Length: 509
Image (tube, rainbow, N blue to C red):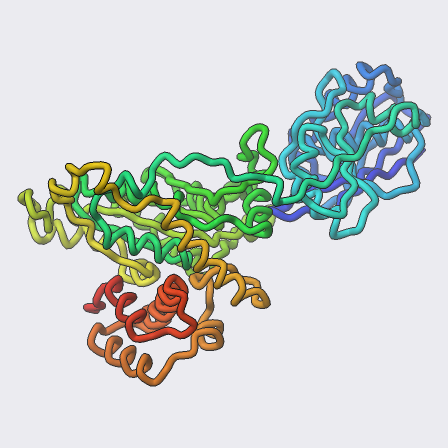
């Protein structure tokens, strides 16, 4: 007898429908074969399914069983096919009747028949909604994660036996209720607050602009000036994730298995800080079976690269295209995938090998050639893709020794201004599909950033005197738009472009 069960496979971050065909032949020696380009984890499902069926009190047929995972030319990876294979065997052997509704079955089985946590549930739920299927049967531990998708009937399956009773109507599984995005609270506590950082008002202002518009940031200065602490305080002033952004981020973490235990959706913007020994594949993504890298895990958040010149040059240069395009394409023999990578790049570096070049209190012992070579580890084209550049100098001792009355502005106050500016941008771009000024393309800048004759004359003079590239010109306009949003101004004024110019290095090439 032949049974066809619908399941799903995650390719990259998107899911596709998989048909699990189970045929039980009455003739031939007992066997259990799985075809359709299965990997080792799928092949091992034979033992998991056999034990799960027996330990659930059902009968495992001692006949020739053939399972085909269609389409056959798509590699099948992971243990998520255990549940549909077991269900297909029960239907093909006559122990269960296939329901009239079209459902997706997805989940890994334990030997005792319980259904375990499986990665990629959110992508499968989105697939069920896209294809307008009747229901989705998945591990009960993952039901809340899938319930964020409205319009999908989610059936939490604790065990194979519970599924058996549900389909025989002896004990019905109650569908998981839809969980609204507003019911999830961002209760994250931040390790650093802007109020804990004395001085550096100029840098804090740059961080505020970067957070409001999603701009890239580069800090250079001697050791101990506070570059790392400033970067790690940045998440405390970032705007809240929108529902669409939260689903995008959660989908990445769900597929890669990085979703924290007990957490069904990511509510705060990611902050990734990989070590400088991270490989290119670890940062960009890839592998034999392509997986997202750190830039995709930082999607809609911050990628902080401390000691940027210490990263291998080819690793830094690999960031050029993702920083510009917001996506990364990975091609391998098994196929090609595209991952989102819209992140804020925040880099920190010492000005020289010893770190004291430009210091007010310490002497630099580096030779001019060594300083030049150290700074040139980051290429000009890469620096040109960074919006805000600043030198972080040492903090005066008078500012370090302060009273509670002299405490700096807190992150919560700054975050309110940032959120207000980001709300303006969300309203402006509601029909375009982007979320911040930093994502604007050249055409979007021309359409959404009208400039007065006075501003154009000022920009023309600035480009000529500072020898700025065309890319730098448009990045200045984007920053000017963000500064105007922070000020609550509808039009970009000369004062906004002038402030943006302070953060652009002069191009000496």
